[in-house]
Image 1: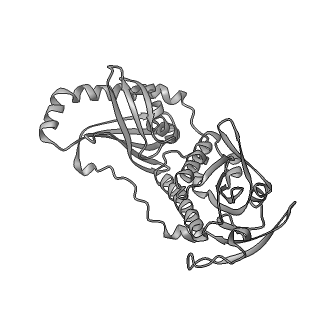
Image 2 (image 1 turned 30 degrees about the vertical axis):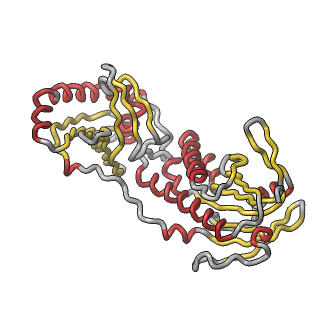
Image 3 (image 1 turned 90 degrees about the vertical axis):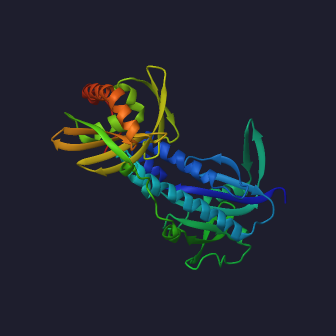
Amino acid sequence: MENRGLLFIPDISGFTRFVNETEIEHSSLIIRELLEVLINANQTGLEISEIEGDAILFYKFGEVPDLETVYKQVEKMFCEFHQHLIAYEHRRFCQCKACMSAIGLTLKVITHYGEFAGYNVKNFNKLIGKDIIVAHQLLKNDIEQHEYWLVTKSLAQNKLPAGFAQWMEWNDSVKQTDNGDVPFHYTQLSPLKNELPPDSSPQLGLSQKIKLFSLSKEYETDIITLFHATGDFNFRHRWQEGVKSVEEVGHFLPRVGMKCRCVLENGQSIIYYASGYSYQPERIEFSETEEKKQSSTYYLLEKTGNNRTKLTLDFYLKKNSIRQILFKWTRQKEMENTFRLSMLNLTEFVKEIKIPAAL
């Protein structure tokens, strides 16, 4: 049985349309994250042969696996894929086409049992054999929906899969290939989305903090441009006084939960994370909190006219009478001046910034 085994291909449907119709940089990062989600959801010891743009070719040599075990792997990958998309939809900062349409991506899984062999090319283990070709050909089929689990009869051992979930309805079809007809069963996976737990966005927790000062300024720019300028950590050193550089910690794209390390001109460094976000076309709110949760900065952007946006910046400190008194005596005036200068710097920066293509 050393040359026979399971071939397991999760494929992100809509990838080609997604890349062709949307902003390339963000779409590629979104797909990269989703592929990592699928890899991290591997719980059955599957090996990776290669990543093929929008799909991953997993394999595992051995006897025909128990179909229920295969289903549990399919279920885990499908659910974690969609949980990631839902979480990103609720937390994303970006309003470009790629980020707005990511929630519409879907996942199908092709599973087949057959004969193949592996060979090494430097650090890569490649697979060869007619069943490798068959598995890839099964990605193109006559199934109209885009979220399904396909099981060839060689894997099902000529039995109709059953008993995994009450909502499952199985259908039969045949794929014509150069090596002959390949019969298979398939069932839709979309009902699994109804069983996903509700997403809980992180809360800022302003009730535990007190506002110490507030600053406002209007800018001659649209609300989306100003939002990207202020909300994207990668731009922070371009306008915020005292910030020498910014190092990304974690997430690839701006969203609630992302972290950055601000390296200050005095040599100190502070880690901030995005702690809250709310979007409306004419009003955007977001907040960031330093890692120890002692202080937070709240940003409110409001559209005030054609190509004009008002920014209000509120600074909060965790409730503690002694800390508040010390801050007011020793740091508040200096910090207010720093934020005023920073907001002045924004006036020129918003004229230079280039943002992802918006709808």
